[in-house]
Image 1 (tube, rainbow over the protein chains, first blue to last red):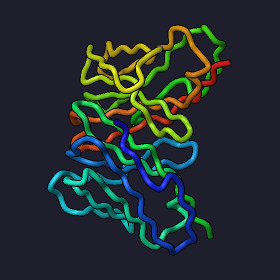
Image 2 (cartoon, helix red, strand yellow; image 1 turned 90 degrees about the vertical axis):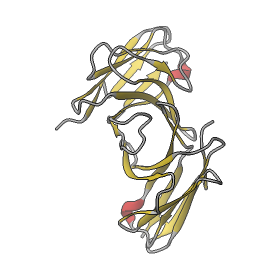
Image 3 (cartoon, rainbow over the protein chains, first blue to last red; image 1 turned 45 degrees about the vertical axis):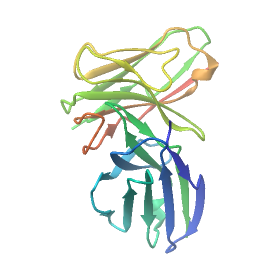
Image 4 (spheres, rainbow over the protein chains, first blue to last red; image 1 turned 180 degrees about the vertical axis):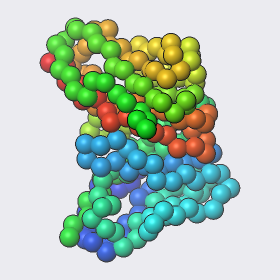
Length: 108
Length: 115
């Protein structure tokens, strides 16, 4: 039931790009993306709604394919501050389920 | 503006002991949630509430109870702690149903160790 994210972990150099995928076995009506720094609480990045367009947040953007029940997060020209664990979240009836998480490390 | 506040931040329990984690939000949100976070497993939903006086089970509710007597507070109880409940616990709140098109706000977490 928990959405599966891939890859589980990724290491980048500053300036490189990355893609994080989120796949659900259930129909998706919306997808949220959060980032969690080590030892901190998750922080909201963006929401993608069914039928909505691709969203962007600084150099981080995301897409949502309702038919494939998938969402992807795109990190362009990564910065050191992008390091953290990224979670997708999917909506159920009144409750919200998070994905398995992707650890991203950006090196100088 | 405090947002979502969890207490305590750290706690060590002995097996069999009980404790209550408190989550308080000052944003007048209807929906509140308790998650646990374990390495490699992401955030898993324990219980949630869609309004004052209501609670419902999430994905991993066994061994936990909750109460929402006041709209701003959501309590998570462990009646008889087990080592398997060692985890980091996060509370979250949101205004929208199932979150929908609204974001969720998280507390800073409670690191619980059961020995």
